[in-house]
Image 1 (cartoon, rainbow, N blue to C red):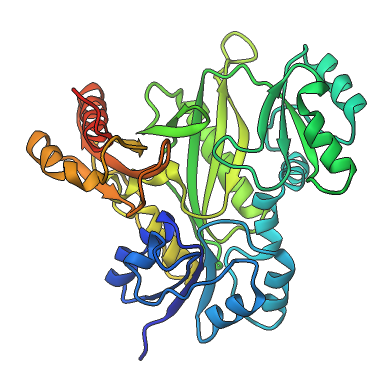
Image 2: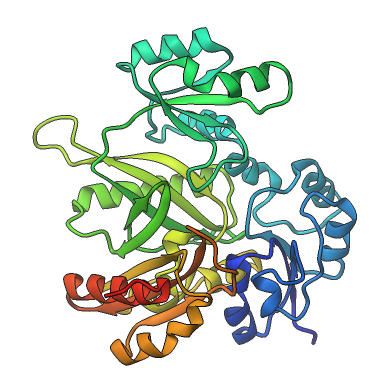
Length: 388
């Protein structure tokens, strides 16, 4: 029998990191890449070049495939709906994926499900935004409902004048719609990864802490240290509620703000910030720190295979992102990393160096959090070319 073909839209590092578990499972990976030198194209043999918005490219991609899935959400829903109507297996399906594409649709549905979220409202004009600002104490977060990620499409504002360009573009039909959310006084950011198969099997990994640097994840600690057990249990239940309520298939990442308890004696609360319906930066630690990585699990889920065990393989795992580098090529530091710390697991993405760009990450596992964190940071620093 021929190996099942999993078609993936998007040629970045997420698709690249699906290659190893696909090979282990004898799954044929076919990836639609943006350029012939894209991150995934360097390691996947079957990597046609095309745009995610190109009907013909998507049609060719799914030919003979067992399932279509994604490493990003920027695929026209109308095209996916047409494929589903024709009998093509699409996971996650367009009815679920729209909640990761459109922040207003997401907020509306999560509110219906009773999922805890920050206060929010759609923004039609400056008057609506000024009214919301008065209601929440003068500071809020304005987001474009589509297209924003890693800090893009997000502004913290104290007046409508700070998003005049967005409002004017939207009013002229040249921009995207906006929502506004209260600026949450959070103590830290958390994330939950859960996987769900079309048959309804659900498995989750421990809640992790996500450390941000200028709007981009710089570090993930698994599990989140000193997390109240009740807060962790609620976060896991919220992720499961979303996965089932939105009929998500594949890996779902739920990013949350941890906020102080509402009353004395209560546990801290988690408010949902963002969703991603694919493998996610907050789950890269699972490659080396879990029995089943998020990438293998995503393949299992979209193929409706039994899901893998998600138990951590060590007390702690810390993932440190390599954001930019002073080196011409971070691989120049591989020998130095290996000499300093043979236990550090390096994952590079084959990307050209650019300031602030995610070039790779390092995972370190062990029994002591302080030691593990220091080692992960030191290895990432060497790959960035930082002088000790």
